[in-house]
Length: 393
Image (cartoon, rainbow, N blue to C red; front, side, top):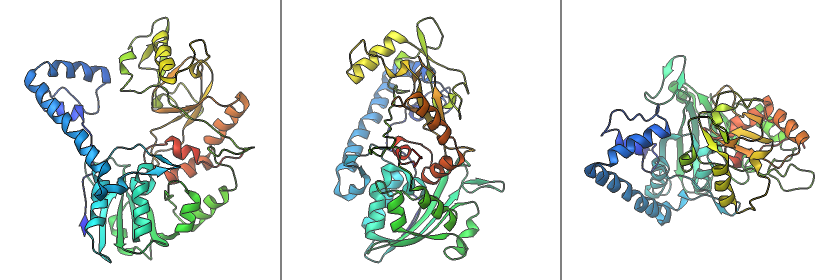
């Protein structure tokens, strides 16, 4: 079976749907406020509103079917006893369907995003692949290079993988290659290009997620194994970091609080793109929030007493959520000033003393920590992978 399925998330896309009714709507270069304003005008038309409601109404049924159907049981990922929240993606559904359709000893070759071996939401599929098939090849491309791109209309830094497996048995080791740019390299794989990864090492490096780190050579694997001597940021042990991470405001769900002008009594809203290594002022704020309104929302959400000191009132560790492994730097962390509110593209911790905060910011911005994170993620430095970083205590 040979497949190159769609790579789309299974959920409604307002900008994409309404573009056909108004060419002024842009999928990329349009603020939330401008879109909501244009959307309100369009939905005032009864015919457009009826189509919009019909478009939206189908997705809950689709999601319910795919998440509850035994045929797609590997779409759900359970990590540390909790179900990992993730959007359904067509490539994941197609991958599981190919497994169901194959006979024993049948083989599949499929082209899908690299998230299959890194993303937390794909853990269930990795358990399926490693436990019920023999993975015969994991060959990853980065889409663009100085010689051009492999797939047009796909971002140059996007990574995808040519995955092959044979149904039946289990995977003990498998050939892998990462960050390739020329499709002709497939002729020399496996053998001349890449390396063999052992499942025992994969499990020790990512015991909770079975994520595959993007090693370029055997030396990379040795370095990663050596770093396992240090405690992980999320480990709950004496003499360890015991870090607690959180998020504050959602850029869509809480957008009704956003104001475009700075005025007395308003606090700046920090987004991921506004911070860089050791810097909280990499870009200027685009939105402000009335402190009373923002505080009331946080109090209600967190069910704490009104007079309590809140996280936004003190210094915090913050790191970018959106930061691809193909960027100049992937792990971007800084100390955040007091009296700022955070969008969901910044994860933060308020559980550190000042001296520990400064040390951790320095350690996280090191080449070593950045290297580890680059091997694990594709496009998001989420909390789970942050907790898995080994950092000297």
